[in-house]
Image (tube, rainbow, N blue to C red; front, side, top):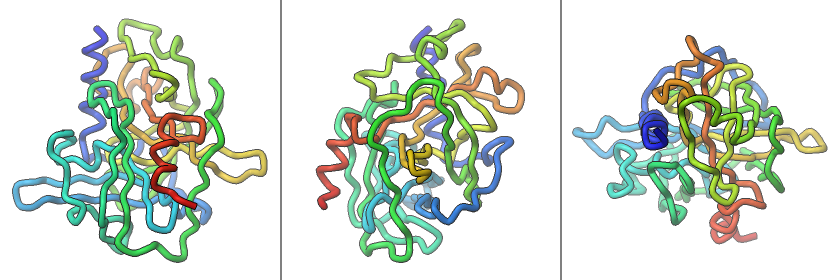
Amino acid sequence: MALIAVAAFVVWAMTGQASAIVTAQAATSDRLSSVVRVDADQGFFDRGLTCTGTLIAPRWVLTAQHCTNVGGRPDEPYRASKIHVGEAGKTVSAVRRMSGYDAKTLVNDVALLELAEPMSGVAPARIADGPLPAASGAEVYGFGGTTVQHTAGVRVTSLAAVNEGPCLFPDPLRGSLTFVTSVRGGSSPGDSGGPMFAAAADGTPVLQTVTAGAADRQTCGSPDLRQRPQAWVGIYNRVDRASEAWSFLAEHLTG
């Protein structure tokens, strides 16, 4: 049963092109200009992909690791030059992938894109100091296979709540994963690699997680936000400063 559930959301996560977030809204805040579109295309026989990323330093964009692989396959990485970021299509000079990535559970599904030139005029996102507690509200952002950045509301939930029903989801190993339920829409394919923001004490949006995938917790199949929003479960990788991913990020984000 666990394998069925895992397979379901891995298929979702690795689908690069799809419709936009369901019942979401356009993102308009200038403070979230750090959210950028990520595109990759290896050539004629590759249908390419659309994902989402977040600028966390002038030359570094954070995204999902499966977004840096052809067809989402870990053994077939894209060449850095085939990945482009933002409306201007900025060239990527190097891809740094977090070790320990598991394509079945989506643990450590985190990567950094190093830009050939720094992105000017955009304030990088601020990374959260720690994880959100269960039942906290947050916003997820992405492009969902479109050119329009959009947002949806989610609520962090407990592992016990996620595992109600016939499907079993993997334990969040050492706190690596965050599970969420829908408040208003949710992530869909193309939003992979995008951020979850929550408000810090001063009201500033802080980056909490990176979008990895989703599933239906009752059917163990692909999620359907239109017909079964109550059963939708989002799977995200933590990137806050108390997470395992932080040591990977800090290794490259000197200063």
